[in-house]
Structure formats: structure tokens, C-alpha cells
View 1: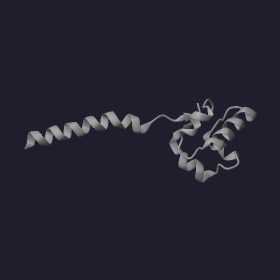
View 2: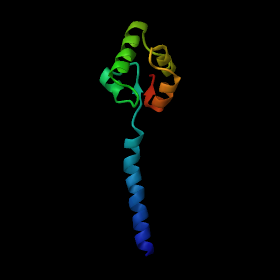
View 3: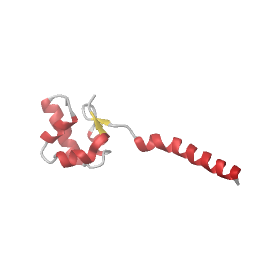
View 4: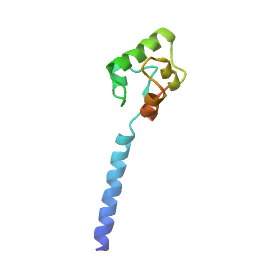
Length: 89
């Protein structure tokens, strides 16, 4: 019985180690991301992604993710939903 428990526990730990990196994902850099890459972020559709790229093209690189609030249609609530999915590098 103890052997079965240890084996099951080991199997669960192994599964978590393999799945955790996939769940964590990597943040999308808003200074280099394409429209398609931005659309992979929850809460960003095609039109919003196009606005993010257009803003970057006309204003230069972002110094902070918070600058996305300068784009019509993106507010603090939207930005908080996107959370750690975005970054500036």
C-alpha cells in the first residue's frame, strides 16, 4: 500500500514538473510583437492588436505596459486582465 502511494505521488510530481512550464508561458514583448503574436494574449483581438502595433509605429517603443491605456479601447480593467501576459523589453 505504501509503495503504491509513493509511486502515485511520484507520478503526480513528475506530471506537474512537465506541465508547469507550459502553463506559465512566456510574456509577449509589446515592443517587438506582431499582430499575430499579440492576438495570442487573452483579451487581445485583431483590432486591438493592430492598434497596439500602430501606436508603437507612430509613438516609438513602449517604456511600460501601462502605456497601453493610451490606446482607445484599452483601459485599466482590460490591462489587468492581460496581466503577466505582456512585458516591455
